[in-house]
Image (cartoon, rainbow, N blue to C red):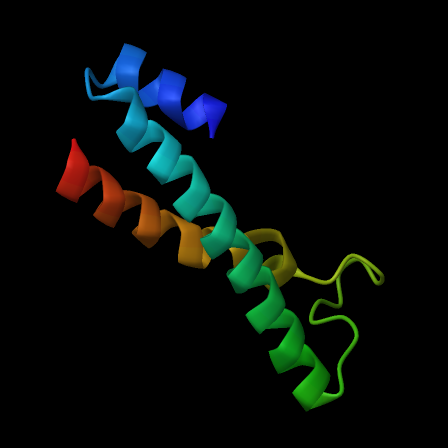
Length: 81
């Protein structure tokens, strides 16, 4: 949330409170993205979705948080800054 406040205020010229809200929204969205991806893998009965490096989960494990957090960040910034 601190990073969001500083980024929005110093780099985008917006209010610090919008950055705090952005930080909170991104943390929640990233956590939800990771949990949803884990639930999908559990329902499919798969531990790893990738085959290139066993134990590392594959590409989806690398971007699961970003898939949800990116659009959330865009919406928050569009509405508030």
